[in-house]
Image 1 (cartoon, rainbow, N blue to C red):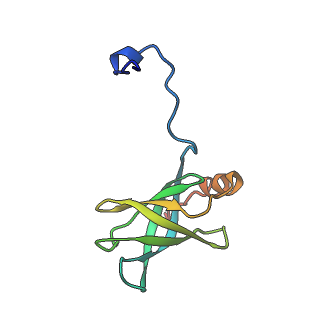
Image 2 (cartoon, helix red, strand yellow):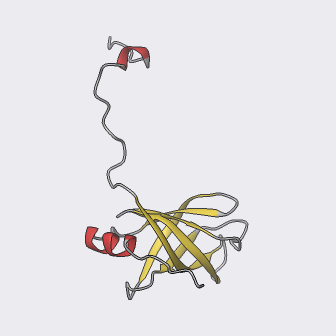
Length: 119
């Protein structure tokens, strides 16, 4: 019989991080082409990327459809589409998991993109 691990018995133990790829904060505009379930059409939605990692990202917009199933994202400066599946959807956010991993160089490059406000 294995001993049970309750929260109080694990206070002194080293807890490993569950996340394999760490998210980097981003603040860049993107175009998300969102597909709904049971349809072949996609809707182009102007949105903002909030954070990014090698395996996924969080995007936000006011114009997402009620249910989203898959998405492909066009990131400025990347030159290609990034396909992904929607893990979870909030009222104004989509948590996207990419179908193929991005390289760390690409993630760092996109994380350095900063927008310059107009005066």
